[in-house]
Image (cartoon, rainbow, N blue to C red; front, side, top):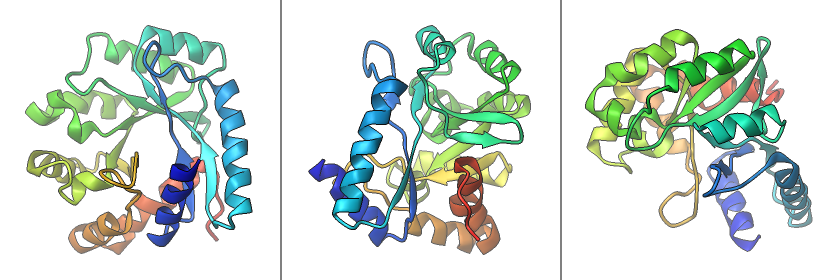
Length: 223
C-alpha cells in the first residue's frame, strides 16, 4: 500500500486527476479476477481518502490474449475499462515477442460480443517493431491502440519511439497512457508525453489522447 500511495502522489504531482488501475490478468502467471480486484480497489480508494490524495481511480485490467482469459471473460471475472458507443472496452495485451496465430479470430470474437479491444503498447511488440503493417488488420477490424507515454519520450529506446510516432501519424492511436509500474523505472508520467504530442501534432490531439478519450472510456465528466 505504501508503494501504491507513493505512485498516486507522483501521479497527482504530474497533473493526473484520474487513473485506471490495470493489473495484469494472465492465467497461471497473474491469476487476478474481478471479484478479488474489487476488494483491492475499495481498500485503495479508502487509503487515498485517508491520506487526502486527490486521485480518482477506476478498475480495469491488462488482459493477456489467451483461451483462459476468454473463459474468465465469459464468467464475468474480467473488468472492463468502460463502455463507448455500445461497446465495452477491454485492455488487451499481446505477448511482447509476437502476435500469436489466432489473434485475429480472438479479436473478431470479442467484437462480435460488443467488446472493443484497446491493444496495449503495440509499439513494444517485436512483430510490430519489425513490420508496422502487422497491426493494421486489428485497427481495420475495429480495435483501438494505446501507446505508452514513456515510449514517446524515449524511455523504451529509439525503435519503440519511432514506431509509436509512426502509429500516431497513421492515425491508428486512440489513447496514450502511463502504463506505470513503479517509481523507479516506470513512474506515472503523462505530462512530458502530452507536451511532446502537442509540439509534434498540436495541443488538440494531445488533449484528445491523454484526457478526452480516456475520460470518455472511463465515463468521467471532464466539464
